[in-house]
Image (cartoon, rainbow, N blue to C red; front, side):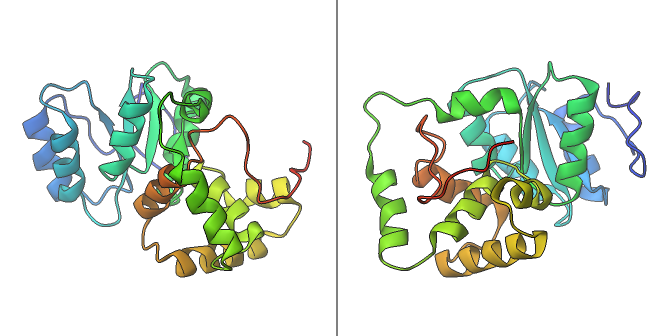
Length: 215
């Protein structure tokens, strides 16, 4: 599908079919996006992390997977992936995922949001406490957390601005403040914080006391 897809100003530089060739290619490429089918032989969690470390610093990793399990998604983002999309996605969704990852945004296949938000049995609820402490102790404001949460879900600045009825400039400001206050240095840090804060674990949407503007 990638070879046939028209990505506008982006183009498919090369396609590989095995792990060793993939590792050699990513070390030499200056690609903005590397789309990886983790079903490729030899790709476990450790191999995925090693693959990410081999990438050029500017390259974003987009994982293509069949698995819809929470653990698979968490493992991919923990290994450094910037995006996760199901292999059954249509061309329009794949196009959107590639474009977002190329822009430095986080992408999560929309069909996986219910999976990531579903409650887990016997899961420690310390994450919700962590989120409450961040607001009640004055570390970050409710609005800053609202912006950061949507960032973790893969919303673009434009979408967050529309959702919260604020300007895109304000979105970037709130995001920067939250990142600085929480000591987050990368997109992976934001994803890990989101997991610790329970944002992917509860079916209840946390908006820091704010009402989400209806679409």
